[in-house]
Image (cartoon, rainbow, N blue to C red):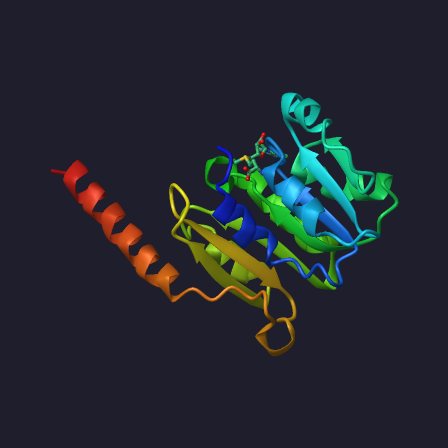
Length: 199
Ligand SMILES: C[S@@+](CC[C@H](N)C(=O)[O-])C[C@H]1O[C@@H](n2cnc3c(N)ncnc32)[C@H](O)[C@@H]1O
């Protein structure tokens, strides 16, 4: 499902475009995140975008930008792809992968590969429609900020993960008290549905 403009904005603004030179995108789809990343990236920055579905890769070939490298590959192959592209580390990994419906071992491999590919100041950014994968983020990163956008159908959480928080919290660090309220409402809804199913 393509993300709304609000979600795309929330996602990409987690990247520090002043300093990011090497950026990876996981799960290109129709390219709405790809285009927004390219719009904000430095002229000397580079974007390597991985997508498993060849139809989407073909569709996104229409994006003409010399900073973009499109690769048809599973995100678990990120280290190999970076090696093939002559890259030793990246400043940001921006993922739109549907973690909740992916096999557990694939999710673990993608999260490990992303973490291993990041430079020390690098950021991993991911959206999700629940907080089900929050523990997997805190397991891998010292700093996990959760943003939230109500203006998406459904509303979505955005994880911004790093080993070192941005200086002074950083202007792009998501802060979302609403996220806790929405997460609590989701949890109550899930418990209620389960209780009704057992009646
Ligand atoms: C929800 S779409 C995201 C599309 C777009 N980035 C957006 O946010 O609107 C998720 C994309 O991830 C791709 N995908 C799913 N599993 C993948 C994997 N293991 N490796 C690479 N891409 C994958 C799907 O084919 C799909 O295009």
